[in-house]
Structure formats: C-alpha cells, structure tokens
Image 1 (cartoon, rainbow, N blue to C red):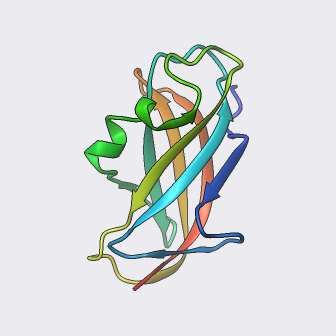
Image 2: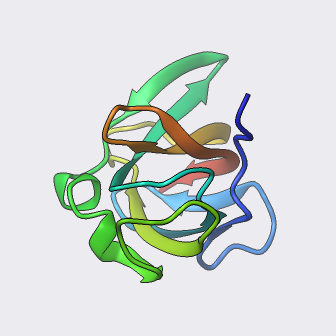
Length: 127
C-alpha cells in the first residue's frame, strides 16, 4: 500500500479550511510531494463530495494536459524520491449552487491512471 499523501497542499489565499472558492473563478492550488516511484508524466483529478455523494469534477483541458509544464520545482520525468512542487487552477462552475463544507479529493495520477498522491481539502463554494 503506497502512501496517499502529498507533503503539502495549499489553496492560494486561504490559511484555514474550509477555504472559500468563488463560483466561476479559478483558484490556485499548490501541491508539494515526493515521487513514490519513477513518474514519466502525470495529471490532476478532482472529486467533490456533496451530501456524501462523490462527483468527478472535470478540470480544464489546459490544466489536465499540461501538468508537467506546471511544475514550479522539478521537471518530468520525476525520479523516485524527488520532491517537486506543482501548481494548478481549480475552477468550480458558476452553474453550481453555493454550498458549504464540500470535501474535494485532489489526486495526481500517472499515465496508467494509478494514483501518485492524493489529498482532501474542504471548501465553501460561494458567489
């Protein structure tokens, strides 16, 4: 069983959870993690839990398809044991209703869709 926790996840502009995320706007997320194995490339995934129901949250193509380019420290391929810093933007559609205390699982997966690291953040979706 590989560990499923990054070194650090930060929602930019938020010092304590739940973090307020404005509907229809992009919010910066920073993940610092140590590669648990050699990683050729990766992509982020997000899954929101509303009233206990998990909903896959589609991330914009520019985020999903360019993860390696958005490493602020390190580069792909990422050797096993290397610490890297990754930045991406989470967009919650303005069509969603404002909701408090949403758990969002953010995971980074490799080319085979195997989870590299994951973490849960709690947000308030606000107007």
